[in-house]
Image (tube, rainbow, N blue to C red):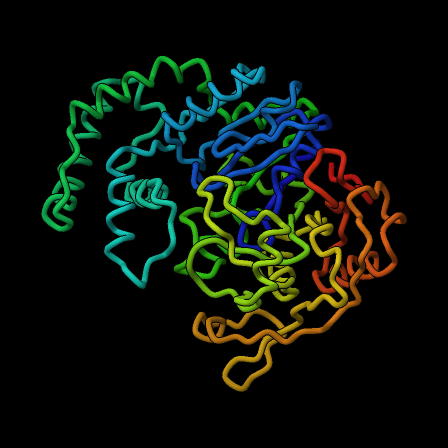
Length: 427
């Protein structure tokens, strides 16, 4: 049976939570496979709005098993706060599974993230300061602490001593900050251990068995393709792999298990943090998109930078991820525009580029080349089929589909659960 991967096709914030919620009653597992509480998904069910930061969106579907897989980095305090918040709203959380191999965000990771970002000044990356990058760095340098380490006090203390011998030197001598107390951290995380234990499992084994048993697994990425550590706008990227390839490593599944890759893409473009953004608007239209689209970060509350749709980025995401289907979100935001610009290429240093330039220097200096499509004035939030959309809105969708290189199988015309036009099944 299928393992379906959901990926952001821009810089994140494309509406992946809405896509997962759409298929929630048709899948058996929803798996978060990378990132941490530096990202978020918003799901609207009726008059209820849920902002999820670390938990998979599938936790809102009563028949789905939500999984935090090995590729995720976990801040236990955030996890427990989020679980308590859902339980207070009547959402069951007992089905959650957490990988024993997932890495833990420690207090020194958060401290280093914040002081390092301040130290960079104008060269800052634009991180959330939640310790995500330093946790992944420790994972790669083989000095990280995993969920399973909390169940062996001796191992946990040994790893903490090793880590703090280094981290406290950096905090105190390089950044002139207070060091982190070993005993305090040890006691705090030992306190988390028993609360976390009922959720912990060999999630890779669980997911592979589920596929063998004919179950459907939905792999939910956070952030987006252009934030991928290898394939994004480096160094203004995240510290993990939000792409479809990252789903295999981050969930412990072989690539032959994945049968469909769904790319989530907005009808325009946004990004948060620093880095190149060719179609960014610094005028009243950028503010118009921000206000009408509600473009503020779910996790951070930061203003999102806004711009027009960028076709080369969509094509790039199709190529990098092997996207089989697109989910186009927030089409309703564009209602009221007489003409809608769409970026079809770039001019950089006197050269025309129809794809993303190879070098970061050229991409930083890229000036968008626009084509203009007819807009529409109708309120499309009440449409429940593609045929109910204005002809110009239909033409906009079909043009984007052709430019992106993969079929648009679903369209969001509002934030609600029922405001999605599904042209083809996403499962």
